[in-house]
Each structure stands twice: as structure tokens, then as C-alpha cells.
Image (cartoon, rainbow, N blue to C red; front, side, top):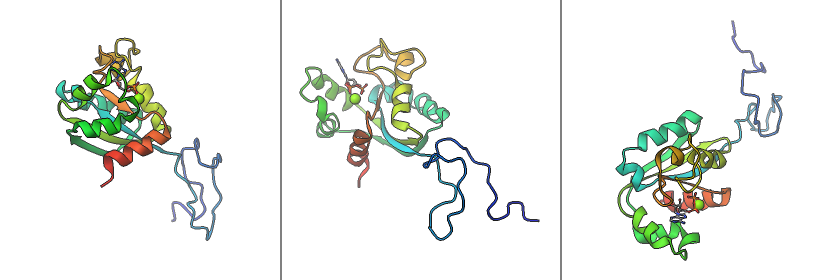
Length: 172
Ligand code: ADP
Ligand code: MG
């Protein structure tokens, strides 16, 4: 007996389908999937050198994973000042940038690309407010950081930033 006959409605998460529908009729000959995947987004994340030094990489990654995000790229890396300047191009003129550059180049970090529904916003919510002293308990910064600079994580702030940062860090 055929368990799933052709054209059967497969059990599938019904929210977030690209076209807003809950099921999709077969689109014969279109080459398009009958059951589109939920909308996914990619975001770029850094587990900064304080996260590596403090042994918090596993704790932080497990929070992203437990939320449902997928790790699609992951790399342990040490960056130089030039890479820091490119990554933080929008901040290089800030008075607090030189010590930030020293910090992010001070030791190995972990760079990652995470994927999932609304990944950019979800990661920033999990990360918490920039200043660890003010970040809400339950967030990564709120639970583990007491600093405005050494705040453990970076997450892209928009789709444009995510595109730029993923290309900067992971293009070969
Ligand atoms: P976020 O990482 O939350 O997007 P920003 O883009 O404003 O924050 O800043 C980038 C990083 O620069 C912060 O994560 C933090 O490490 C550092 N930073 C931001 N503001 C300050 C500040 N006033 N003093 C020292 N470091 C700062
Ligand atoms: Mg930022």
C-alpha cells in the first residue's frame, strides 16, 4: 500500500509559507516545489574574543540552536586590525573604536552564519542590548556580560549588513 499517494497533503508547518498559503496545489511542470520551505534568512554572528577566553562558545551556540536557528558556517579565527576596520566600518571614527579594535583583535573569535526564520531580528533579541550592564536578564549579554565593549557577541543589524558581513567574512 502506498503510504503517501501522489498529491497527498503532507504534514507540514503551516505558518510562514512564502505565499502565505497553508497548502499548495501541485504546480506540475513549473519546477517549483509543491511545499515551499518557510522563509529563511541568514545572519552573521561573531562570538567575540571574550566569549572564547571565557569558555562560553558552547553556551552561546547552544542558545542559538535551542531557539531553532541552524549553524550554516562556523569558523575559529583571529583577525587583524584591517579586518576589524572593515567589519566595523560604520564605527571607525567613534572615540571608543580604538579600544574596540584592540579587543576584537586580541585573540581568537568564532565567526558564524546562522539561518532561520527572521534570523537577524531573532539573533539580536537573543544577544540583548549592546551594554551588558543594561541588557535584559535572559539574553546572552544580560546573563554573561558586564561591559559595553566586551559584550560577547555580534549580530548583523539588517539584511544589508548581513549580506555585506557574510561576504566580507566568508567569501573565498
Ligand atoms: P551592537 O553590537 O549591539 O550592534 P553597536 O553596533 O552600536 O552595537 O557597536 C558595535 C560594538 O562596539 C558593540 O557591540 C560594542 O562591543 C562596542 N561598543 C558600542 N558602543 C560602545 C561604547 N560606547 N563604548 C565602548 N564600546 C562600545
Ligand atoms: Mg551594530
